[in-house]
Image (cartoon, rainbow, N blue to C red):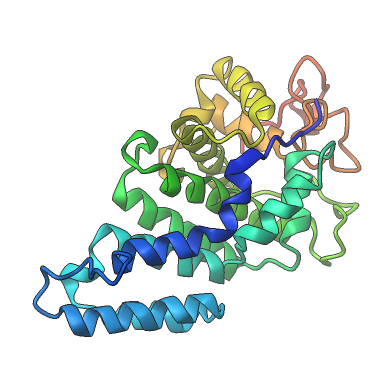
Length: 293
């Protein structure tokens, strides 16, 4: 199954996400959303500065600026979203660019599209996306308790985390092609696999809660596959993945899965390390699935 996009209106509005976030922070129409805080004027000036820094992709500066807010304002929901936006941007996420990439990549496997979208990704980029994820989950771990805009952002944040991991591990020379020597069973760590598992769970949950039509057919395929492996795609945090569990094995195998139109189709493993019964004897496992880590 190829990865197809039905972007619709939801995708066209993503380029305005930061503007929406800014209006939420300022209250729109000149209304200050933080009038209840004693240091409202000072905090509002700090928020305006950080927002301008984000607009100019000055991610580290924005993070530093936001951390000078009063504790009550910094802990507020809208500021936490702004902080997550800054970390996600520093990790490599550009909402408009990624949405356009997805829109123009019909027929390619999802993981391959995401790998290509984040060339030259580093461990620092991955860590920033993980931090942004943690901030958003501090608002709510469950997607149903987040707003539609927060869940739309969460979908793309998790895609950025996936893209960073896949790029850093499978495209080490940043040429947009999977390294000839890449092996998803032997070339991904427990930490990477667990982060991929949580990304998939959050993407599915956030799409379902927001009604976003991005990759609906892919989501349905993932959900069906996960149902037969103990609900692997219901995992929302990397720390919740049990070592050598069916969920972990499924996730690691999906990284290279080509028959479902999801994975990287590692050159040496395409058609071999696939979800059973499609694949056979992956790295001595006796089945198409990766052996336990």
